[in-house]
Image 1: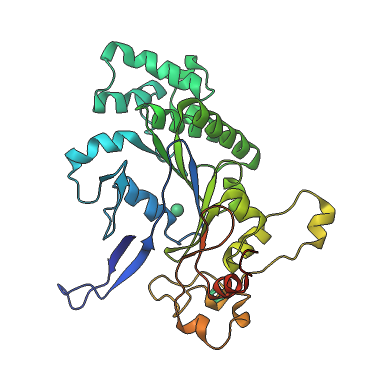
Image 2 (image 1 turned 45 degrees about the vertical axis):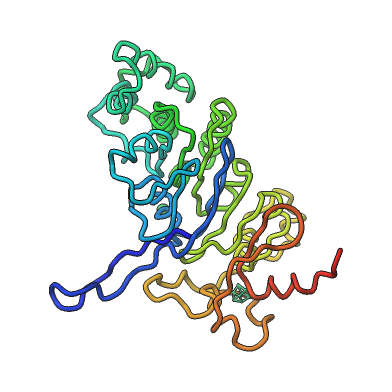
Length: 332
Ligand code: SF4
Ligand code: MG
């Protein structure tokens, strides 16, 4: 039930904040060891804020973050340190997160120096092994970030995240800034590394297609909340929430016959401001199915995530989905 609110404005010069931006508004999920959870939604839905709260970059306003059962919310920096080692981050723009004045070798050994996990004499060897693990030539260890392409820089970012042998890597749109051809290479690399090192990923993307091959489970976020969470195949084959349906309908299909027959759901308007979220179901101003629910329910009553029948652990928050569930015959 993670919440992250940011104060905005203030009443008078030194007054209380005029309001709060509910960037993350009661989000719950679990990432299992060695598994991947995709967190998908349009920009501004709170997915990066969620990721940053998990690693302690933004302290949570309320709720709980547990690592193997240990509560992380409220830990001091010092007590958080061993967990920070186990949870690393990869960012969208590898260039912005790599110090241009440091060689790759120095970038990769820096976490080892800070956390003192590897003896000084062995650090350089570790840097070479890391470069090899991410498909870069270890001979490039003395080069600087600007001497690498965008895809190679993201490999350096991944190598740095691996340096401390984490269990969980939080990937915040790691391929969004890359060319499509390079995206696939980086996603394949992440999949290989996951298998080799038993990594878990919390993988953030604005595009469902990106999480399809990497994530066993997918959560769809809208305006600070999870609106649907399901195992990957369930979600892609039978999306239930209208927002998930719309996002999926935007992914082109390779088969031209299928592509032509498909109905593209066009979302009306932009994502509303999280300063002033819509009443009722926050998706209602853009929902193409709100007319299917009787009366004003969609605009007045907020739906809650509820478990759905059928395979896997699946939840959605939508009045229409709940009506459909109620219609499922017993035993059918
Ligand atoms: Fe659409 Fe209503 Fe479901 Fe919200 S609750 S997603 S408006 S049908
Ligand atoms: Mg973001």
